[in-house]
Image: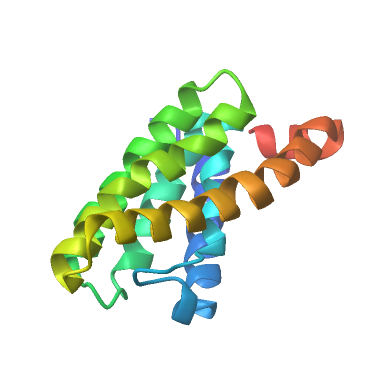
Length: 157
């Protein structure tokens, strides 16, 4: 059995980045209003679906420290799982950038149940934050990465 050290190394870096960024700004990484900057990384599977495992595990480990506990580990990670699958299947980067906003409804439902916040308010808050982080900020960053052949080839795998 051949071990793919490149795969392991790159996904370990993704896990560490996702976790470190989220924890560093933890006051705004959790809750009904959240700006988890690390969510920009969910666009990596658009470049190569092999990054999905690093994103999912990074989210799972990060959600271990969530004030919502195991519920966030399950539902938040499930939302990320669905997101990276759809990002990796997307034909355009812009469409890929919308999936986190769409699947944030899962996190909204979780927050509604735990904090007894109306679903509409929770959904709007979470969806706006995902849209700002991934589409407004992440999309242009990834457009630059994709246009830069040297950087793109380094990330591509």
